[in-house]
Image 1 (spheres, one colour):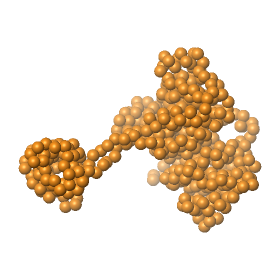
Image 2: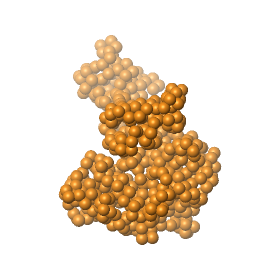
Image 3: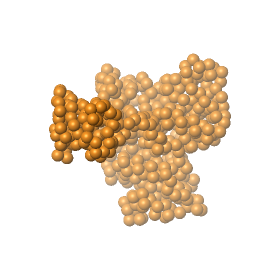
Image 4: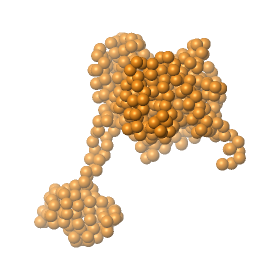
Length: 496
């Protein structure tokens, strides 16, 4: 590293994500941290949920990503974003490890992040944190008191017990890991949340991970670009310049960016489009985008309690192969702005115990936006699950058919040969694909164009049969070559 680059390196504050089972208190811990560290005056400035916020403890800052859970975290990671530096695994001390807990552990390990276990709800009479620690051993998560290296802290979001200890442990790990950033490099980071604001247009919450971002800068993701028109911190204050580890709302994107997309600053809109949008057709970007499909929802409900219950139940739907992204979740009737957002974002509008107003109904018909309403939660979940299953991409699987040995070469043309062979194992079918092996080493690939048995064309031949074949492939085969024959089949898997 050059001296100039080294000179611009700074220690940056940690970015923390909180993961765990839906009912174990992730949101409650985030709220407890806010209550403890953000004064009522400051808190009054938080007018909307932006997906991330910043606190200060012992003179040092910490950024928390306030996501709906590990489903959103999985979506971020699937799109290549290294979203957080440290993970807090929340487990309710009066319960035990749940499937979502195991899933969260898997995500944390795959991301290679330091982990802190927060044993929550220790104020409950039935809490037994020691039992949970023992259960964690079977998941290869061994906390310090059990002889491992992973710190664990007893917490209660209700009484605020352990919250200060949690913050201090985050800062200790941050000091040991020494997270750094270079202020002189182009700004880069990840999209945390995005939506269309009826007053301000497309807004996105981003976290800067390297470089410095300023008003007027050009940003590009693999799906859209932005000229930064305005920036706000998590309390709604206008900011002109943002340094690493800072969450900020950006206004100026041309299209709604996807959660988890990586962004980078460019010198011009043209350069951003050339390097980000156009390579979208390349195999690398295509694989990245297809890795996880997204079902976008707009939720409207009769009361806040219903809305929270729906969000919790939807969070329990498996989302490894397709993800639910809730663009908006509000109380009140479905209106025309909901339909407009659904049209722009290609989302589905769902109402619970409410209907769309006449203007929204008319607009939905014109714009071909799907609105569905329910009075029972399980019916709503059933419909969302079915819609999510349709988003799962088809998978291609290889099905082995059998093996054959090349006995004789009758004719060789460019790219094809007529050969005689014998089925060693399985069943060989016309149209199947094959791998060519010579001396136990794969040397080429090909396809069976025609099959003949006793000078008659056939569709298949079985074990022990001698036959003739029209082979087409990328290599000239020889006597004694072995063909491993297979087919490729497309199928649509379930959500799990």
